[in-house]
Image (cartoon, rainbow, N blue to C red):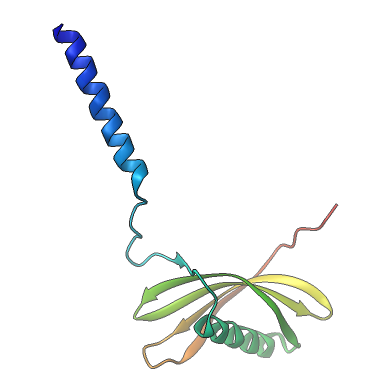
Amino acid sequence: MGVTWLLLAMTSAAGMASGALGAAPAPPMPGAYQLATSIGPDERAAATVAIRERALQERKALRLVAIERVDRQVVAGLNFRLRLRVELGGQLRTAEAVVYRNLQGQHQLTSWQWLLSRRAP
């Protein structure tokens, strides 16, 4: 009877622990990027700055087609990590840009990376 009771208690405790873990998602890590739940004026402003500054760097016209994803990171200000669909020279391309907004509300493009496009078969 002692072994059966011990197994039952262990199984019950393991079940409660796994149920507790599956019940609520882990809280976000401080300082980590978090997926933006919507694309609002802040995200559009960051995308506009990214396109404008990259167009100056490329010395070519870039046109924003879509904001595909935005992640936000709270720092001393905000970092916006944007996945952008853009038109460059008549071709659609995808890029990942990071735009920093300081505490005074000024934006700065801090990185831009062209991503490989997936082609349909």
